[in-house]
Image (cartoon, rainbow, N blue to C red; front, side, top):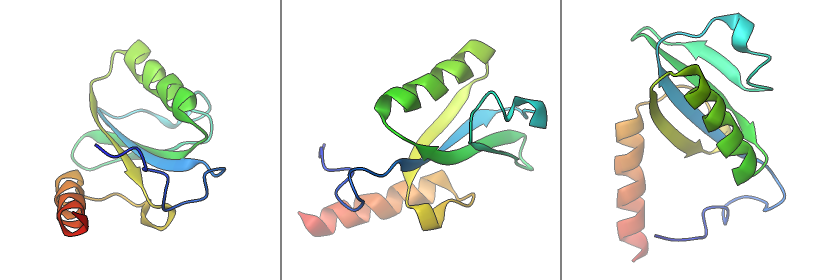
Length: 103
């Protein structure tokens, strides 16, 4: 596994993540998730999207999800221009094809 996840972006810039959880969270939770956008999806899941300054901040968000007792479905690093909802499985396939080409 490569350690150069931040190689495409400025190392000083926050990374954008999409965190998918089971169930819907109401808008009243938006302040608790500090700057992340909460999107209720038609399939009964919630997508938390936004910039996270570092790994410690990401773990803090994941700790909040854990504390709510809501099942965590996925955590995906996305490019800033790709921050809309997408199929996680197709993104993983696309990344694996890219990794094979780089080898």
